[in-house]
Length: 285
Image (cartoon, rainbow, N blue to C red; front, side, top):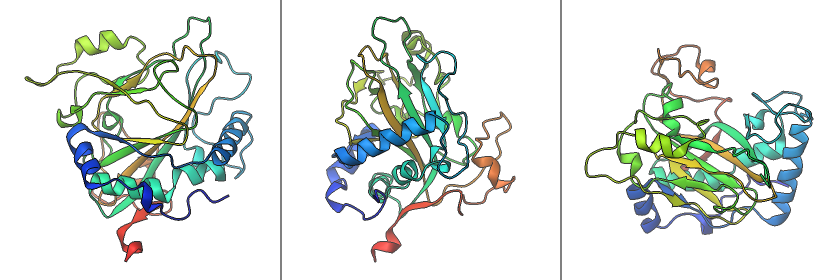
């Protein structure tokens, strides 16, 4: 199966969708991945958790079967290093084409991926919340917020199983003082945020069918609540950047592991094998 192959132009956003993204900082695609494709993806996600690395290369910080606290959120960085099926999700051409349209740019590259698994809580007390955050808070090794995240739903998602929630227009507020992916008290975070005058913190649940993909700007505030269902919420966050994204050394320590491969090349564009191209307008000529 080749999920990354041809660009599906029927899935690309219309001009009104691009305008919506520009105004609100997020957008939800039609279904991109079929049921058969999703079944294979989920099977390979489970293989990764068993420590079966198809390429022989381990991802970053992978959760493995038998580890403590199986009820916690699982976050595996760079699963595309380890498994070719998961790599096909991370470098999907249609996802790249949508990201290019929304960011109004010619080229989209992969920055990194995060394979995510939010266990079903059932009667337990664990929440596996994701705290309010802006992705760019962790990516200041990039010279500007020229990045976008594509969040691929492997299962249906709604409020009952901890879907993402977006804060519309927050990508226009700049980088705020409260960013903590692992914070469990979302209400406390919200109260501590210093949002711009005349703006409002309001949330929109991103309700999706399996196979849909949501897109959000690197400055859009987002988070998610508990999975109170009996089934795991499965997904992949595909973090993407425009072709003009440049490396910047960050003295505060936000030097992402992928940025370390730049070897201190201040001001240079991220390009090369470590950051594959998903889409370029040149290929459409």
